[in-house]
Image (cartoon, rainbow, N blue to C red; front, side, top):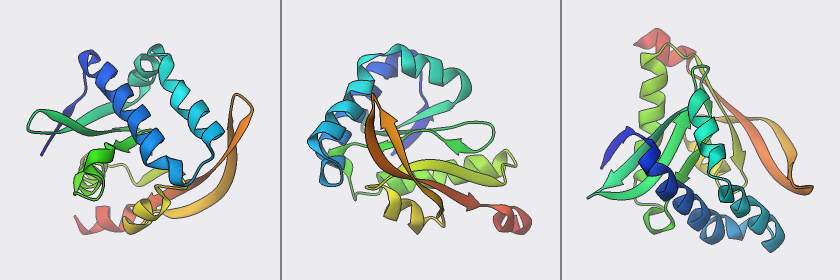
Length: 160
C-alpha cells in the first residue's frame, strides 16, 4: 500500500469511492433517506476543490487501485476518512490512520479532531479517539447522528 498527496485528477475517483462507501458500508447505520442525501453531496465536485484549499487530502492505493482517502488540516481536523467497501477490514483504515497520526506528530499537532459517523465511531475509538459530543447534523434538513471525537496526542509528542 502507498499513500500520496491527492491531486485534482484524483477527485472524480475519490467522489466515486465516497458514494460507493456510503451506499454499501454506512447503509447499516443510516436510513435510505439519509444515505441518499449523504451520497448526493458528491454531486457537486466543486465542494472537494474548495475543501482542498484548507485540507490536505491523501489517497491510499494498492497496485494502482484507489483503496481509500483521508484529509487533515493544519489544526488537526480530519475532514474525510473513507475506505472502499472492497477494502474494509483489510488494513487500509489502519494504514491511513497511522499516516494521519504520524503526519500530526511531524507537524506538532497536539490534538486530532473529527466528526465521525455512527459506522466509523468504533474504528476511531481503537485509535484513542473519545467522544466529545454526540450530535445531530443535517443535510438538506435531513438529520444525521454523528460524533465529535478527539484524540489528545500530547503524550505521544512528549515521548517522541
